Amino acid sequence: MISLISPAFNESANLGPLYERLAAAMAAVGVDWEWIVVDDHSRDNTFDVLRALTARDPRVRGVRLARNSGSHVAITCGLHLAKGDAAIMLAADLQDPPETIRAMLERWRAGAEVVWATRRERPGDRTHSGFAAVYYWIMRRVVGMNEMPERGADFFLIGKPVLDAFRQFRERNVSVLALITWIGFRQETIEYDKQPRTAGRSGWTLARKVKLVVDSIVSFTDLPIRLCWYGGAALLALAVVVGVIGIAQLPTLGAALLLMLSVVLGLAGLQLIALGLIGEYVWRTLDEARGRPQYLIEAVADAAQGERIAAAADA
Image (tube, rainbow, N blue to C red; front, top):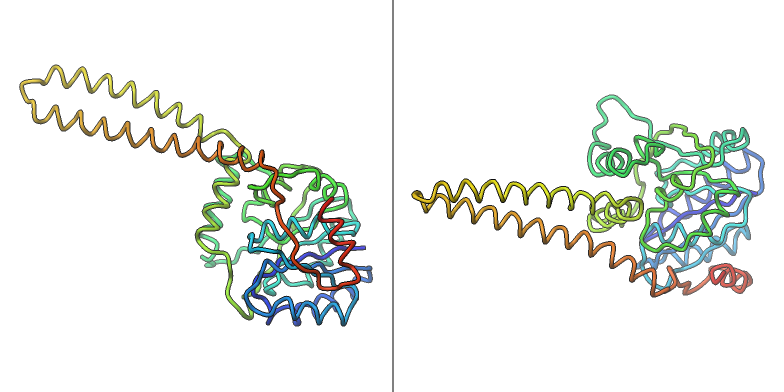
């Protein structure tokens, strides 16, 4: 049985068409399936549409989070609730074509435990040259996750061993995609053509993109702290050299003072940056130590399944 998982935020116009395409795609591959939709506290009637779908098809399950927590928390919730032998994460905005699932299942049956669906690169396609390209370059070249797909992937399949391993992690501030890459097992990629959004607006704001970058870096490497050490040592050595030169140039007092002032300001800026980086690590330590639940479920789309879903979330 295959668990399909879709985080949804203000996707009322897309859930119905996506269900139709999912049902057709899964019927074509001939496997049992369930579709878990995690409503990330939408402001529209996404959850009402979800209730209607669950009444229409018992294979559809849905939960509504008590607060808007972001797509990665919603994905985590869906993976915690999945009951299948494999789980597939695809967006609720119809940008990830369900017809790609057949190829993903073929790779999984051939032995891959993680199958990444990466967007096919087209000549002249510049849409990937923005934030996504920078993010995946940082993850591969700076953080050191060379196994991560070069063009990234947020449409993926994971087998039962990876799903069970993922459930052992209780980290709050982390990229789900980076964590699955880090877990390991046999990982392969396929290519597909990402589709344009058919309705609604993306909730993937600039602030959330920046938070994802910070979370991904500080969750998997201490490189920023080491860079602060290296930069501090280099600037301290430079300050000594400039100080010696300044003393030698005392007759031109004005120039020397300006030079020294620039050094002082540079060192002060470096210290503030270093404190900010260390503060990011300290804050995440505090966040983990408090032990607050990563998400809370406000409602379930099928009352008959409510008790079981709530029990799975508590577990």
